[in-house]
Length: 280
Image (cartoon, rainbow, N blue to C red; front, side, top):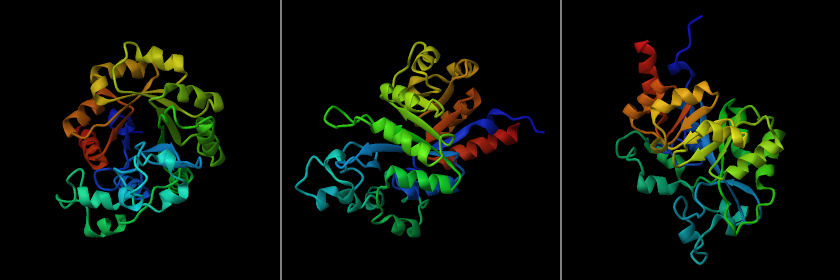
């Protein structure tokens, strides 16, 4: 048996392959799977009629045509639109128009792919999880903080219940910047792994994660030095770093032993890991 190295055990996690497809769509997840990612990341919001929908922002204008479709509904909060209304929106054409990572101009995104993005919708959480399950894959479900104006009494518990219903408790990592959500998720099902998202460094991340009852520390790349990762892993804390797109930084995190890296370019991380394996 070949001894596993850090190159073999690290998870390629991607934020919906945002460099080559519209974020938080099934099409983006498909692209990440094709590129060899081990899991994808999605974001959960609540619609006006309490449906769990996969959208990153609190508002709809950045990633859809809501400004033209519902011109009189500013500020276009997700929580002010029903699922039926959200279904009317185009969540793909903006990507073709803006080319947010320059990959269309670089020729990485084909004309066929661009045509397929026109008019695509935002999936519900159920649809996204079912697609993930059908493809025998894994997903990081980020619970967005819904804010004071959104009624969300059972938000966390409903997400957990759906994961249980679909038999995906071993295929999902629940993460959030709202760490109270993580406590609630563990209370609802202690077997589902949870990860504490942080934008700033914490003095004792291992102790903090243990106090939350969580399993992983998910810092921004600015919030952690690679040199701290080995100690966290030795204390049985998984470390998922976000969002890293440059190959030199990806390589440093691989060498440090990160559990996983969230990237908009899973193809770059796959290349770094391939080079790492050949070197060993």
